[in-house]
Image 1 (cartoon, rainbow over the protein chains, first blue to last red):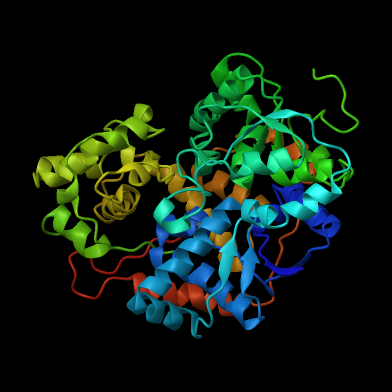
Image 2 (tube, rainbow over the protein chains, first blue to last red):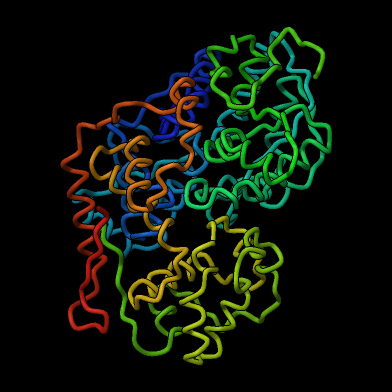
Length: 287
Length: 203
């Protein structure tokens, strides 16, 4: 199996653990990830905030590069990249005037349509392979956290149910884990305010960590680098907002699947987290 | 990085609709956006009131909206538009209000750090193609004067390999720079509009 791959900037830097676990899981499942040649940043929320045309042109250029490389489908593990790529693809498809304006900015035709999928859609597609290769059932109870960009706005991303998605729970079940019912699956973690307004991230991500802890989850599972960094790296601000320490670890969904496949914690980047992860197989008593 | 500088004359509701196709008359003030907004409690005006300010066409309401802190606190989480019974794209409208606030020079002081972050981010992409996190943080700190922010986190970030010392440069940097130039040029308003061409530089 072969699929186009857009890692995005975070997976090379602040979320290297996500990138490492995506690659380790793909290798274990014999999926070849073909990177978009010489890819650049999707523009993220900054292009969106400062220049709407650029915010469409940058992802559209990536889709054109993918099409030129013969890729008709691309997996974008970063939820923000996924959202920008899907949004831009849809915008130029629905608005011929915008399409020609973007083509002028890019100075090249956009080419064939490229389908963009997120990491949950990709894992769902290979779930039979995962099920057949589980060596060490995950066996833990977790809270699946989707955040904003995988499910909103539903008219753009058209993935799962916007208010109560369930696809990550299904994947955790395939990996042999259990999930809790909770209230903060799609509440915002504070997104891009991490640097400009850390206190807001402490408050918003704090509510998420608090509810997951109260429901006796042993970890929060995410599929977005920004959510991970707000919930993990910003735990200091979170504990300050909550008024007490909350040691609940935060795992990428690919790390959960990787552990179930018997991959080493190191190959999955589990040592890079700020909140220590003590869930490695063989299972130890939950602390 | 330049910022779109749309015309600033006439009724705000009309300018909003012509630039973004967001029609505020569709809002019937049900308040669902304010109920679901994760930042509403930190805002000076809740999201539904921002729309109300535009609906009245009153200059004092438009002024209160553009000078508000609220428009700078929007996270773009899209909860409001996902739940809006009448499909009013409030995040898109707020992007436009931010542009207007900057063009009129009435932006709330909250805007400073947020804009510094976005400009440092895009500047990094324009130079290298991919985000150079170390440079982003350095430029953000210089622009805001928040030199000591998160200093305690830095050693762990390096130790855990979460921040690189060197940029990831792509080979197509020149083509990318042209894309930035053309997108900025296209975003400038035609000559003779109320705001006139005005550029703000990132660094």
